[in-house]
Length: 177
Image (tube, rainbow, N blue to C red; front, side, top):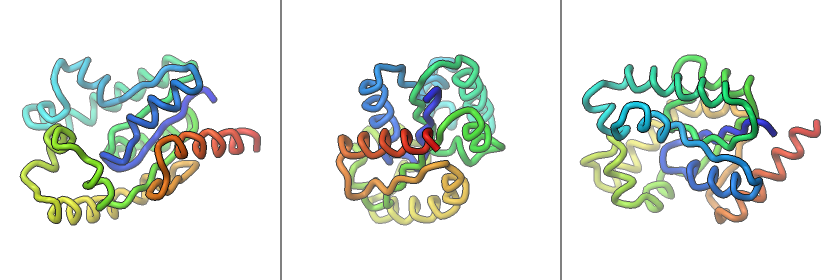
C-alpha cells in the first residue's frame, strides 16, 4: 500500500484516522491542510480570508502533488474540499488507494469542538441547526466527487479503533484483487 488517501467532509475524522492508521502500519501520516499551512505560514482560515479560495485550492493541489511525488507509503488526510476541485479525485485514484469516510452532518456537528468550528472559515457564525443544514446541503454537492473513491466506509456506528480495523481490512482485500 504505497499511498492511502482518506477523503470526506470536514470534521468526519480523516486526520485522526490517518494518524491512527499510520501509527498502526508504522508509516508516515500526512495532512494536506498542514502542508498548506506550513508552506504559507498561515492557518487555512486565514488563507481563505486574505488570499481567497482559488489561491488556497492552487496551493492545496501543489501539496497533493508533493505528497504523490515523494512516493513511499503514506496515509494522507485530505482537506474536505480537495476532492471537489479540478481532477484531484482522479489524481488520487491513479496515485493510490482512496477511502471515502462517510458520516452524517448531525454527527459531525456533535463531534466538532469549538476550536474545530473556529478554524473552518465556512462554519463561523452558525448555530448547531444552521450548521447541520449547511453541512447537509454542502455534502449533497460534494457526494459525487467523494463517491469516486475506491472504497466507501459508513462511519456513523463505529469507534475510531473499529474504523481503523475496517479500513485496513478493506484496503488489504482491495489490494489482493
